[in-house]
Amino acid sequence: MTLNRPDVFGSISLMFWSIVIVVCIKYLGFITRADNDGEGGILALAHLTRSSLREGSRRYALVMILGVIGASLFYGDSLLTPSISVLSAVEGIEVAIPSLSHVVLELGVLIIVGLFVVQRHGTEKVGKSFGPIMIVWFVTLAAMGLTHIAEDPSILAALSPHYGMLFIAEHPFIAFVASGAIVLVITGTEALYADMGHLGRPAIATAWFGLVFPALTLNYLGQGAMILNHPETVSNPFFKMAPDWGQIPLVLLSTMATVIASQAVISGVYSVSRQAERLGYLPRLTVRQTSAHTGGQIYVPAVNWLVFAGVLALMLTFGESSRLATAYGVAVTATFILTTVLFCVYASSALGWKPWQVLLAGGLFGVIELAFFAANVTKVFHGGWLPILVALLLSTVMLTWQRGVVLVTARRTKLEGPLTEYLSSDAVVNVKRIPGSAVFLHPSKQTVPLALRENVHFNQVLHNNVVIVTTRSLNVPHVDDSERVTIDHLASEYDRITHVQLDYGFSDHQDVPAGLKVAAERHGVELDIENATYFISRITLRISDRPGMARWRKGIVRGLAQNAARPSDYFHLPIDRTVLMGAEVNF
Image 1: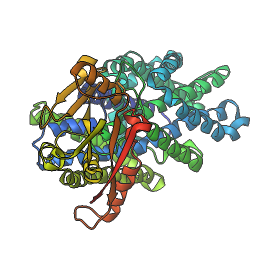
Image 2: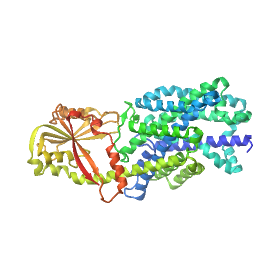
Image 3: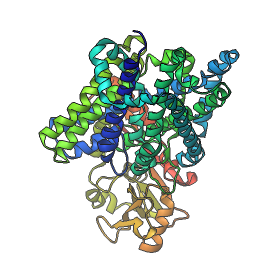
Image 4: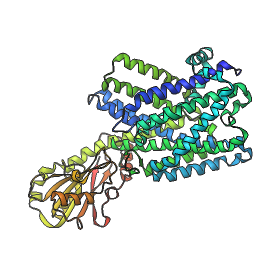
Protein backbone atom coordinates (compact mmCIF):
# COMPACT_ATOMS: atom_id res chain seq x y z
CA MET A 1 0.00 0.00 0.00
CA THR A 2 1.41 3.39 -1.01
CA LEU A 3 1.82 5.84 1.86
CA ASN A 4 -0.81 8.54 1.41
CA ARG A 5 -2.65 11.14 3.49
CA PRO A 6 -5.98 9.25 3.99
CA ASP A 7 -4.15 6.15 5.20
CA VAL A 8 -2.03 8.10 7.70
CA PHE A 9 -5.10 9.99 8.87
CA GLY A 10 -7.00 6.71 9.21
CA SER A 11 -4.26 5.04 11.29
CA ILE A 12 -3.98 8.00 13.68
CA SER A 13 -7.76 8.18 13.96
CA LEU A 14 -7.93 4.49 14.96
CA MET A 15 -5.19 4.99 17.55
CA PHE A 16 -6.82 8.09 19.02
CA TRP A 17 -10.32 6.64 19.27
CA SER A 18 -9.03 3.36 20.66
CA ILE A 19 -7.55 5.35 23.54
CA VAL A 20 -10.70 7.42 23.97
CA ILE A 21 -13.07 4.45 24.07
CA VAL A 22 -10.96 1.91 25.98
CA VAL A 23 -8.96 4.12 28.35
CA CYS A 24 -10.95 7.33 28.80
CA ILE A 25 -14.50 5.99 28.65
CA LYS A 26 -14.29 2.35 29.68
CA TYR A 27 -11.57 2.31 32.31
CA LEU A 28 -11.50 5.84 33.72
CA GLY A 29 -15.20 6.44 33.16
CA PHE A 30 -16.56 3.12 34.45
CA ILE A 31 -14.13 0.38 35.47
CA THR A 32 -12.01 2.35 37.97
CA ARG A 33 -15.18 3.25 39.87
CA ALA A 34 -15.56 -0.44 40.71
CA ASP A 35 -12.94 -0.71 43.45
CA ASN A 36 -12.65 -3.19 46.31
CA ASP A 37 -11.86 -1.03 49.36
CA GLY A 38 -9.65 1.16 47.18
CA GLU A 39 -8.00 -1.74 45.34
CA GLY A 40 -8.38 -2.19 41.59
CA GLY A 41 -7.63 -4.96 39.13
CA ILE A 42 -9.66 -7.75 37.64
CA LEU A 43 -9.66 -9.83 40.84
CA ALA A 44 -11.10 -6.90 42.77
CA LEU A 45 -13.79 -6.53 40.11
CA ALA A 46 -14.55 -10.26 40.21
CA HIS A 47 -14.89 -10.15 44.01
CA LEU A 48 -17.24 -7.16 43.84
CA THR A 49 -19.29 -8.86 41.17
CA ARG A 50 -19.55 -12.09 43.13
CA SER A 51 -20.66 -10.16 46.23
CA SER A 52 -23.66 -8.88 44.31
CA LEU A 53 -24.78 -12.35 43.13
CA ARG A 54 -26.75 -15.08 44.84
CA GLU A 55 -24.40 -17.52 46.55
CA GLY A 56 -24.49 -20.95 44.96
CA SER A 57 -25.62 -19.75 41.55
CA ARG A 58 -23.67 -20.60 38.40
CA ARG A 59 -22.68 -16.99 37.86
CA TYR A 60 -21.44 -16.79 41.47
CA ALA A 61 -18.80 -19.45 40.83
CA LEU A 62 -18.06 -18.42 37.24
CA VAL A 63 -17.13 -14.79 37.96
CA MET A 64 -14.27 -15.76 40.25
CA ILE A 65 -12.95 -18.26 37.72
CA LEU A 66 -12.97 -15.50 35.11
CA GLY A 67 -11.22 -13.21 37.60
CA VAL A 68 -8.51 -15.78 38.26
CA ILE A 69 -7.98 -16.32 34.52
CA GLY A 70 -7.78 -12.55 33.99
CA ALA A 71 -5.30 -12.15 36.84
CA SER A 72 -3.20 -14.98 35.42
CA LEU A 73 -3.17 -13.29 32.00
CA PHE A 74 -2.05 -10.09 33.71
CA TYR A 75 0.86 -11.99 35.26
CA GLY A 76 1.85 -13.14 31.76
CA ASP A 77 1.71 -9.56 30.56
CA SER A 78 3.82 -8.45 33.53
CA LEU A 79 6.70 -10.55 32.23
CA LEU A 80 6.48 -9.17 28.70
CA THR A 81 5.95 -5.46 29.42
CA PRO A 82 9.27 -4.73 31.21
CA SER A 83 11.16 -6.90 28.71
CA ILE A 84 9.85 -5.31 25.54
CA SER A 85 9.64 -1.76 26.96
CA VAL A 86 13.22 -1.57 28.16
CA LEU A 87 14.68 -3.30 25.10
CA SER A 88 12.76 -1.11 22.65
CA ALA A 89 13.97 2.04 24.41
CA VAL A 90 17.59 0.95 24.64
CA GLU A 91 17.48 -0.07 20.97
CA GLY A 92 17.19 3.64 20.21
CA ILE A 93 20.98 3.62 20.57
CA GLU A 94 21.08 1.88 17.20
CA VAL A 95 19.63 5.06 15.65
CA ALA A 96 21.70 7.57 17.62
CA ILE A 97 25.01 5.65 17.87
CA PRO A 98 24.98 2.62 15.53
CA SER A 99 28.44 1.51 16.73
CA LEU A 100 26.97 0.64 20.15
CA SER A 101 24.28 -1.67 18.84
CA HIS A 102 26.16 -4.73 20.12
CA VAL A 103 25.68 -3.70 23.80
CA VAL A 104 21.91 -3.17 23.65
CA LEU A 105 21.00 -6.45 25.37
CA GLU A 106 23.61 -6.03 28.11
CA LEU A 107 22.39 -2.50 28.89
CA GLY A 108 18.79 -3.71 28.99
CA VAL A 109 19.69 -6.47 31.46
CA LEU A 110 21.52 -4.01 33.74
CA ILE A 111 18.52 -1.67 33.74
CA ILE A 112 16.12 -4.50 34.61
CA VAL A 113 18.38 -5.66 37.47
CA GLY A 114 18.45 -2.13 38.89
CA LEU A 115 14.67 -1.74 38.55
CA PHE A 116 13.86 -4.87 40.54
CA VAL A 117 16.53 -4.21 43.17
CA VAL A 118 15.03 -0.80 44.09
CA GLN A 119 11.51 -2.21 44.49
CA ARG A 120 12.09 -2.89 48.19
CA HIS A 121 12.17 0.87 48.80
CA GLY A 122 8.48 1.06 47.91
CA THR A 123 6.27 2.78 45.34
CA GLU A 124 6.16 6.05 47.27
CA LYS A 125 9.94 6.56 47.39
CA VAL A 126 10.48 5.23 43.89
CA GLY A 127 7.63 7.41 42.64
CA LYS A 128 9.14 10.57 44.11
CA SER A 129 12.27 10.02 42.05
CA PHE A 130 10.35 8.95 38.95
CA GLY A 131 7.66 11.64 39.03
CA PRO A 132 9.76 14.58 37.76
CA ILE A 133 11.21 12.36 35.02
CA MET A 134 7.73 11.48 33.77
CA ILE A 135 6.70 15.13 33.68
CA VAL A 136 9.77 15.92 31.55
CA TRP A 137 9.01 12.88 29.38
CA PHE A 138 5.43 13.83 28.55
CA VAL A 139 6.27 17.49 28.09
CA THR A 140 8.98 16.37 25.65
CA LEU A 141 6.49 14.17 23.78
CA ALA A 142 4.09 17.08 23.46
CA ALA A 143 6.83 19.50 22.35
CA MET A 144 8.11 17.09 19.70
CA GLY A 145 4.61 16.61 18.39
CA LEU A 146 3.79 20.32 18.31
CA THR A 147 6.96 21.05 16.30
CA HIS A 148 5.84 18.80 13.47
CA ILE A 149 2.14 19.71 13.75
CA ALA A 150 3.18 23.32 13.15
CA GLU A 151 4.65 22.23 9.80
CA ASP A 152 1.36 20.66 8.71
CA PRO A 153 -1.64 21.72 10.89
CA SER A 154 -4.00 19.80 8.61
CA ILE A 155 -3.00 16.65 10.53
CA LEU A 156 -5.40 17.75 13.29
CA ALA A 157 -8.24 16.54 11.06
CA ALA A 158 -7.05 12.98 11.77
CA LEU A 159 -8.84 13.20 15.13
CA SER A 160 -12.13 12.82 13.29
CA PRO A 161 -13.52 9.27 13.65
CA HIS A 162 -14.67 9.14 10.05
CA TYR A 163 -11.07 8.74 8.85
CA GLY A 164 -10.74 5.60 10.91
CA MET A 165 -13.99 4.20 9.57
CA LEU A 166 -13.00 5.00 5.98
CA PHE A 167 -9.66 3.25 6.50
CA ILE A 168 -11.46 0.11 7.74
CA ALA A 169 -13.96 0.25 4.86
CA GLU A 170 -11.33 0.70 2.14
CA HIS A 171 -8.65 -1.62 3.55
CA PRO A 172 -10.44 -4.13 5.84
CA PHE A 173 -7.66 -6.74 5.83
CA ILE A 174 -4.86 -4.22 6.34
CA ALA A 175 -6.88 -2.55 9.12
CA PHE A 176 -7.36 -5.95 10.77
CA VAL A 177 -3.63 -6.72 10.66
CA ALA A 178 -2.79 -3.18 11.80
CA SER A 179 -4.99 -3.69 14.86
CA GLY A 180 -2.30 -6.01 16.20
CA ALA A 181 0.03 -3.00 16.34
CA ILE A 182 -2.54 -0.33 17.21
CA VAL A 183 -3.38 -2.22 20.40
CA LEU A 184 0.07 -1.30 21.70
CA VAL A 185 -1.21 2.22 22.44
CA ILE A 186 -3.58 0.83 25.11
CA THR A 187 -1.66 -2.15 26.49
CA GLY A 188 -0.88 -0.55 29.87
CA THR A 189 -4.51 0.12 30.70
CA GLU A 190 -5.10 -2.95 32.88
CA ALA A 191 -2.01 -2.03 34.91
CA LEU A 192 -3.55 1.42 35.40
CA TYR A 193 -6.61 -0.25 36.97
CA ALA A 194 -4.54 -2.67 39.03
CA ASP A 195 -2.44 0.22 40.39
CA MET A 196 -5.41 2.04 41.92
CA GLY A 197 -4.44 0.88 45.40
CA HIS A 198 -0.98 2.40 44.97
CA LEU A 199 -2.04 5.77 43.56
CA GLY A 200 -5.79 6.26 43.97
CA ARG A 201 -8.34 6.99 41.25
CA PRO A 202 -8.28 10.83 41.53
CA ALA A 203 -4.50 10.97 41.03
CA ILE A 204 -4.67 8.59 38.06
CA ALA A 205 -7.49 10.52 36.37
CA THR A 206 -5.83 13.90 36.96
CA ALA A 207 -2.48 12.75 35.56
CA TRP A 208 -4.12 11.07 32.58
CA PHE A 209 -6.40 13.88 31.43
CA GLY A 210 -4.11 16.71 32.53
CA LEU A 211 -0.84 15.49 31.05
CA VAL A 212 -0.56 11.98 29.61
CA PHE A 213 -3.48 11.90 27.17
CA PRO A 214 -2.82 15.35 25.63
CA ALA A 215 0.91 14.61 25.30
CA LEU A 216 0.35 11.25 23.61
CA THR A 217 -2.23 12.71 21.23
CA LEU A 218 0.09 15.55 20.18
CA ASN A 219 2.97 13.15 19.67
CA TYR A 220 0.96 10.74 17.50
CA LEU A 221 -0.28 13.67 15.42
CA GLY A 222 3.27 14.97 15.12
CA GLN A 223 4.53 11.60 13.91
CA GLY A 224 1.79 11.54 11.30
CA ALA A 225 2.68 15.03 10.05
CA MET A 226 6.38 14.16 9.89
CA ILE A 227 5.77 10.95 7.93
CA LEU A 228 3.65 12.81 5.38
CA ASN A 229 6.28 15.51 4.88
CA HIS A 230 9.32 13.25 5.25
CA PRO A 231 8.39 9.71 4.10
CA GLU A 232 11.95 8.50 4.67
CA THR A 233 11.36 8.66 8.45
CA VAL A 234 8.70 5.94 8.39
CA SER A 235 11.19 3.24 9.46
CA ASN A 236 11.62 4.73 12.95
CA PRO A 237 9.41 7.80 13.26
CA PHE A 238 9.61 8.33 17.02
CA PHE A 239 13.36 8.78 17.41
CA LYS A 240 13.60 10.63 14.11
CA MET A 241 11.19 13.27 15.41
CA ALA A 242 14.10 14.70 17.39
CA PRO A 243 16.90 16.69 15.73
CA ASP A 244 20.28 14.98 15.45
CA TRP A 245 21.62 16.68 18.59
CA GLY A 246 18.60 15.53 20.59
CA GLN A 247 18.58 11.84 19.72
CA ILE A 248 20.97 10.69 22.43
CA PRO A 249 19.14 12.64 25.19
CA LEU A 250 15.86 11.24 23.81
CA VAL A 251 17.20 7.68 24.05
CA LEU A 252 18.19 8.26 27.67
CA LEU A 253 14.86 9.88 28.52
CA SER A 254 12.82 7.19 26.77
CA THR A 255 14.79 4.50 28.59
CA MET A 256 13.96 6.09 31.94
CA ALA A 257 10.32 6.45 30.89
CA THR A 258 9.98 2.80 29.90
CA VAL A 259 11.56 1.77 33.19
CA ILE A 260 8.87 3.77 34.95
CA ALA A 261 6.16 2.21 32.78
CA SER A 262 7.51 -1.18 33.80
CA GLN A 263 7.27 -0.03 37.43
CA ALA A 264 3.53 0.47 36.98
CA VAL A 265 3.11 -3.13 35.86
CA ILE A 266 5.26 -4.47 38.70
CA SER A 267 3.27 -2.49 41.26
CA GLY A 268 0.09 -3.88 39.73
CA VAL A 269 1.41 -7.42 40.15
CA TYR A 270 1.97 -6.77 43.86
CA SER A 271 -1.62 -5.58 44.25
CA VAL A 272 -3.09 -8.51 42.32
CA SER A 273 -0.97 -10.95 44.35
CA ARG A 274 -2.20 -9.55 47.66
CA GLN A 275 -5.78 -9.65 46.43
CA ALA A 276 -5.31 -13.28 45.40
CA GLU A 277 -3.97 -14.05 48.87
CA ARG A 278 -6.87 -12.30 50.62
CA LEU A 279 -9.40 -14.09 48.43
CA GLY A 280 -7.85 -17.48 49.14
CA TYR A 281 -6.16 -18.15 45.78
CA LEU A 282 -2.57 -17.89 47.03
CA PRO A 283 -0.92 -18.86 50.34
CA ARG A 284 0.19 -16.28 52.90
CA LEU A 285 2.76 -13.92 51.38
CA THR A 286 5.31 -11.75 53.09
CA VAL A 287 3.90 -8.29 52.32
CA ARG A 288 5.79 -5.18 53.37
CA GLN A 289 3.86 -1.94 53.71
CA THR A 290 5.93 0.83 52.12
CA SER A 291 3.72 3.85 52.84
CA ALA A 292 2.32 5.12 56.12
CA HIS A 293 -0.62 6.74 54.36
CA THR A 294 -1.66 4.57 51.40
CA GLY A 295 -2.59 0.96 52.04
CA GLY A 296 -2.05 -0.17 48.47
CA GLN A 297 1.65 0.76 48.43
CA ILE A 298 3.28 -2.56 49.19
CA TYR A 299 6.29 -4.69 48.33
CA VAL A 300 6.03 -8.48 47.97
CA PRO A 301 9.57 -9.95 47.89
CA ALA A 302 8.65 -13.41 46.58
CA VAL A 303 6.59 -11.99 43.71
CA ASN A 304 9.24 -9.39 42.91
CA TRP A 305 12.00 -11.95 42.41
CA LEU A 306 9.81 -14.44 40.55
CA VAL A 307 8.80 -11.73 38.05
CA PHE A 308 12.43 -10.62 37.82
CA ALA A 309 13.54 -14.15 36.95
CA GLY A 310 10.84 -14.41 34.28
CA VAL A 311 11.67 -11.03 32.73
CA LEU A 312 15.38 -11.81 32.67
CA ALA A 313 14.76 -15.19 31.05
CA LEU A 314 12.62 -13.60 28.33
CA MET A 315 15.19 -10.91 27.55
CA LEU A 316 18.03 -13.40 27.27
CA THR A 317 15.94 -15.84 25.23
CA PHE A 318 14.38 -13.43 22.71
CA GLY A 319 17.17 -10.83 22.65
CA GLU A 320 15.29 -8.20 20.60
CA SER A 321 12.10 -6.22 21.15
CA SER A 322 10.87 -7.11 17.66
CA ARG A 323 10.94 -10.81 18.55
CA LEU A 324 9.22 -10.14 21.89
CA ALA A 325 6.54 -8.11 20.09
CA THR A 326 5.21 -11.29 18.49
CA ALA A 327 4.28 -12.55 21.98
CA TYR A 328 2.69 -9.27 23.01
CA GLY A 329 -1.00 -8.40 22.88
CA VAL A 330 -2.76 -11.74 23.34
CA ALA A 331 -2.82 -11.60 27.14
CA VAL A 332 -3.72 -7.91 27.24
CA THR A 333 -6.64 -8.13 24.84
CA ALA A 334 -8.01 -11.26 26.51
CA THR A 335 -7.91 -9.44 29.86
CA PHE A 336 -9.79 -6.50 28.30
CA ILE A 337 -12.59 -8.84 27.23
CA LEU A 338 -12.83 -10.56 30.61
CA THR A 339 -12.93 -7.17 32.37
CA THR A 340 -15.79 -6.04 30.11
CA VAL A 341 -17.76 -9.24 30.79
CA LEU A 342 -17.32 -8.93 34.55
CA PHE A 343 -18.23 -5.26 34.57
CA CYS A 344 -21.41 -5.93 32.59
CA VAL A 345 -22.45 -8.54 35.17
CA TYR A 346 -21.54 -6.15 38.00
CA ALA A 347 -23.44 -3.26 36.40
CA SER A 348 -26.52 -5.44 36.01
CA SER A 349 -26.48 -7.05 39.46
CA ALA A 350 -25.03 -4.33 41.69
CA LEU A 351 -25.50 -1.00 39.91
CA GLY A 352 -29.00 -1.72 38.66
CA TRP A 353 -28.31 -0.98 35.01
CA LYS A 354 -31.13 -1.76 32.62
CA PRO A 355 -30.55 -4.48 29.98
CA TRP A 356 -30.27 -1.95 27.15
CA GLN A 357 -27.57 -0.04 29.06
CA VAL A 358 -25.58 -3.23 29.65
CA LEU A 359 -25.91 -4.24 26.00
CA LEU A 360 -24.87 -0.79 24.80
CA ALA A 361 -21.74 -0.63 26.96
CA GLY A 362 -20.85 -4.28 26.43
CA GLY A 363 -21.41 -4.01 22.70
CA LEU A 364 -19.33 -0.85 22.29
CA PHE A 365 -16.37 -2.09 24.29
CA GLY A 366 -16.72 -5.75 23.33
CA VAL A 367 -16.68 -5.25 19.55
CA ILE A 368 -13.51 -3.18 19.70
CA GLU A 369 -11.76 -5.55 22.10
CA LEU A 370 -12.79 -8.66 20.18
CA ALA A 371 -11.31 -7.11 17.03
CA PHE A 372 -8.05 -6.44 18.85
CA PHE A 373 -8.04 -9.96 20.29
CA ALA A 374 -8.71 -11.57 16.90
CA ALA A 375 -5.86 -9.58 15.33
CA ASN A 376 -3.49 -10.73 18.08
CA VAL A 377 -4.55 -14.38 18.02
CA THR A 378 -2.60 -14.65 14.77
CA LYS A 379 0.53 -14.24 16.91
CA VAL A 380 -0.11 -17.38 18.97
CA PHE A 381 2.22 -19.58 16.96
CA HIS A 382 4.90 -16.87 16.80
CA GLY A 383 5.41 -16.31 20.53
CA GLY A 384 1.87 -15.48 21.63
CA TRP A 385 1.70 -18.92 23.24
CA LEU A 386 4.00 -17.70 26.02
CA PRO A 387 1.56 -15.52 28.01
CA ILE A 388 -1.17 -18.09 27.39
CA LEU A 389 1.05 -20.81 28.87
CA VAL A 390 1.90 -18.62 31.88
CA ALA A 391 -1.81 -17.87 32.42
CA LEU A 392 -2.72 -21.54 32.13
CA LEU A 393 -0.12 -22.57 34.70
CA LEU A 394 -0.99 -19.80 37.15
CA SER A 395 -4.74 -20.35 36.81
CA THR A 396 -4.20 -24.03 37.59
CA VAL A 397 -2.08 -23.17 40.64
CA MET A 398 -4.51 -20.55 41.99
CA LEU A 399 -7.65 -22.63 41.51
CA THR A 400 -5.87 -25.67 42.95
CA TRP A 401 -4.82 -23.75 46.08
CA GLN A 402 -8.34 -22.41 46.58
CA ARG A 403 -9.84 -25.88 46.31
CA GLY A 404 -7.09 -27.34 48.50
CA VAL A 405 -7.76 -24.80 51.25
CA VAL A 406 -11.42 -25.85 51.29
CA LEU A 407 -10.48 -29.52 51.66
CA VAL A 408 -7.78 -28.92 54.26
CA THR A 409 -9.97 -26.55 56.29
CA ALA A 410 -12.76 -29.10 56.37
CA ARG A 411 -10.37 -31.80 57.57
CA ARG A 412 -8.69 -29.46 60.07
CA THR A 413 -12.01 -28.25 61.48
CA LYS A 414 -13.03 -31.85 62.05
CA LEU A 415 -9.78 -32.55 63.87
CA GLU A 416 -9.95 -29.38 65.95
CA GLY A 417 -13.58 -29.60 67.08
CA PRO A 418 -15.66 -26.85 68.75
CA LEU A 419 -13.63 -24.68 71.13
CA THR A 420 -16.15 -23.96 73.90
CA GLU A 421 -17.18 -27.63 74.06
CA TYR A 422 -13.55 -28.70 74.39
CA LEU A 423 -12.81 -26.16 77.13
CA SER A 424 -15.72 -27.55 79.16
CA SER A 425 -14.60 -31.16 78.76
CA ASP A 426 -12.88 -33.21 81.48
CA ALA A 427 -9.69 -33.25 79.41
CA VAL A 428 -9.24 -29.54 80.09
CA VAL A 429 -11.12 -29.04 83.35
CA ASN A 430 -9.12 -31.74 85.19
CA VAL A 431 -5.74 -31.17 83.54
CA LYS A 432 -2.77 -30.11 85.64
CA ARG A 433 -2.11 -26.34 85.49
CA ILE A 434 1.51 -25.21 85.54
CA PRO A 435 2.96 -21.72 86.18
CA GLY A 436 3.35 -19.35 83.28
CA SER A 437 1.48 -17.92 80.32
CA ALA A 438 0.80 -19.59 76.97
CA VAL A 439 -0.35 -17.83 73.79
CA PHE A 440 -1.91 -19.87 70.98
CA LEU A 441 -2.30 -18.24 67.56
CA HIS A 442 -5.42 -19.40 65.75
CA PRO A 443 -7.57 -18.08 62.86
CA SER A 444 -10.82 -18.01 64.86
CA LYS A 445 -12.47 -18.71 68.21
CA GLN A 446 -14.79 -21.33 66.79
CA THR A 447 -12.43 -24.32 66.85
CA VAL A 448 -9.61 -25.62 69.06
CA PRO A 449 -6.04 -24.66 68.16
CA LEU A 450 -4.33 -27.93 67.30
CA ALA A 451 -1.28 -26.82 69.29
CA LEU A 452 -3.50 -26.45 72.38
CA ARG A 453 -5.09 -29.85 71.87
CA GLU A 454 -1.71 -31.53 71.29
CA ASN A 455 -0.16 -29.87 74.35
CA VAL A 456 -2.94 -31.10 76.61
CA HIS A 457 -2.99 -34.57 75.08
CA PHE A 458 0.74 -35.33 75.07
CA ASN A 459 2.09 -33.20 77.93
CA GLN A 460 -0.98 -33.52 80.18
CA VAL A 461 -0.55 -29.90 81.33
CA LEU A 462 -1.97 -26.47 80.72
CA HIS A 463 -0.46 -23.14 81.66
CA ASN A 464 -2.09 -21.07 84.38
CA ASN A 465 -2.92 -18.33 81.90
CA VAL A 466 -3.94 -19.26 78.37
CA VAL A 467 -4.64 -16.72 75.63
CA ILE A 468 -5.94 -17.68 72.19
CA VAL A 469 -5.13 -14.89 69.71
CA THR A 470 -6.83 -14.08 66.41
CA THR A 471 -5.63 -11.17 64.25
CA ARG A 472 -7.85 -9.24 61.85
CA SER A 473 -6.88 -6.73 59.13
CA LEU A 474 -9.10 -3.68 58.65
CA ASN A 475 -9.21 -1.32 55.68
CA VAL A 476 -7.93 1.71 57.56
CA PRO A 477 -4.33 2.98 57.82
CA HIS A 478 -4.05 2.57 61.60
CA VAL A 479 -6.03 1.18 64.51
CA ASP A 480 -5.53 3.01 67.79
CA ASP A 481 -4.56 0.92 70.80
CA SER A 482 -7.83 1.91 72.46
CA GLU A 483 -9.74 0.08 69.69
CA ARG A 484 -7.32 -2.73 68.96
CA VAL A 485 -8.44 -5.38 71.47
CA THR A 486 -11.66 -7.41 71.77
CA ILE A 487 -11.95 -9.85 74.69
CA ASP A 488 -14.04 -13.04 74.99
CA HIS A 489 -13.82 -15.24 78.10
CA LEU A 490 -15.20 -18.21 76.16
CA ALA A 491 -16.48 -21.09 78.32
CA SER A 492 -15.93 -19.43 81.70
CA GLU A 493 -14.81 -16.09 83.05
CA TYR A 494 -12.82 -17.82 85.79
CA ASP A 495 -10.84 -20.53 83.98
CA ARG A 496 -8.12 -18.08 82.88
CA ILE A 497 -8.57 -19.14 79.25
CA THR A 498 -9.28 -16.04 77.15
CA HIS A 499 -9.74 -15.25 73.47
CA VAL A 500 -8.19 -11.98 72.30
CA GLN A 501 -8.92 -10.49 68.89
CA LEU A 502 -6.32 -7.96 67.71
CA ASP A 503 -7.35 -5.54 64.96
CA TYR A 504 -4.74 -3.89 62.75
CA GLY A 505 -4.80 -1.29 60.00
CA PHE A 506 -3.10 -1.82 56.69
CA SER A 507 -0.12 0.30 57.78
CA ASP A 508 0.24 -1.40 61.16
CA HIS A 509 2.73 -4.16 61.75
CA GLN A 510 0.87 -7.21 63.04
CA ASP A 511 3.00 -7.32 66.19
CA VAL A 512 1.20 -9.81 68.41
CA PRO A 513 3.38 -9.34 71.54
CA ALA A 514 2.79 -5.57 71.39
CA GLY A 515 -0.94 -6.11 70.94
CA LEU A 516 -1.07 -8.48 73.92
CA LYS A 517 0.69 -5.89 76.04
CA VAL A 518 -2.20 -3.54 75.31
CA ALA A 519 -4.65 -6.32 76.24
CA ALA A 520 -2.89 -6.88 79.56
CA GLU A 521 -2.46 -3.23 80.51
CA ARG A 522 -5.81 -1.83 79.36
CA HIS A 523 -8.17 -4.80 79.52
CA GLY A 524 -6.86 -6.76 82.46
CA VAL A 525 -5.93 -9.93 80.56
CA GLU A 526 -3.82 -12.07 82.89
CA LEU A 527 -0.60 -12.56 80.97
CA ASP A 528 3.13 -12.37 81.67
CA ILE A 529 4.23 -10.67 78.45
CA GLU A 530 7.96 -10.87 79.11
CA ASN A 531 7.97 -14.63 79.69
CA ALA A 532 4.97 -15.89 77.73
CA THR A 533 5.44 -18.88 75.44
CA TYR A 534 3.91 -18.69 71.95
CA PHE A 535 2.50 -21.82 70.38
CA ILE A 536 1.91 -22.18 66.65
CA SER A 537 0.06 -25.07 65.07
CA ARG A 538 2.33 -26.37 62.33
CA ILE A 539 0.25 -28.39 59.93
CA THR A 540 1.91 -31.09 57.85
CA LEU A 541 -0.19 -32.00 54.85
CA ARG A 542 -0.26 -35.63 53.84
CA ILE A 543 -1.58 -36.63 50.44
CA SER A 544 -4.13 -39.43 50.69
CA ASP A 545 -6.60 -41.14 48.41
CA ARG A 546 -9.49 -39.12 49.84
CA PRO A 547 -11.81 -37.83 47.13
CA GLY A 548 -12.07 -34.19 46.14
CA MET A 549 -8.86 -33.53 44.22
CA ALA A 550 -6.36 -35.32 42.02
CA ARG A 551 -3.09 -36.34 43.68
CA TRP A 552 -0.96 -34.07 41.45
CA ARG A 553 -3.08 -31.09 42.50
CA LYS A 554 -2.69 -32.08 46.14
CA GLY A 555 1.06 -32.02 45.53
CA ILE A 556 0.78 -28.39 44.40
CA VAL A 557 -1.17 -27.49 47.56
CA ARG A 558 1.41 -29.13 49.80
CA GLY A 559 4.28 -27.41 47.98
CA LEU A 560 2.68 -23.97 48.29
CA ALA A 561 1.87 -24.52 51.97
CA GLN A 562 5.48 -25.45 52.71
CA ASN A 563 6.71 -22.22 51.13
CA ALA A 564 4.20 -19.83 52.69
CA ALA A 565 5.46 -16.98 54.87
CA ARG A 566 6.49 -18.09 58.39
CA PRO A 567 3.96 -17.06 61.07
CA SER A 568 6.74 -16.34 63.58
CA ASP A 569 8.17 -13.65 61.29
CA TYR A 570 4.81 -12.32 60.18
CA PHE A 571 3.55 -11.82 63.76
CA HIS A 572 6.89 -10.67 65.24
CA LEU A 573 7.10 -13.49 67.76
CA PRO A 574 10.24 -13.96 69.90
CA ILE A 575 11.97 -16.92 68.33
CA ASP A 576 13.41 -18.16 71.64
CA ARG A 577 9.91 -18.42 73.14
CA THR A 578 8.02 -19.76 70.14
CA VAL A 579 7.04 -23.42 70.01
CA LEU A 580 5.84 -25.22 66.90
CA MET A 581 3.41 -28.03 67.65
CA GLY A 582 3.12 -30.34 64.68
CA ALA A 583 0.01 -32.10 63.48
CA GLU A 584 -0.79 -34.05 60.35
CA VAL A 585 -3.79 -33.47 58.15
CA ASN A 586 -4.58 -36.09 55.52
CA PHE A 587 -6.48 -34.68 52.56
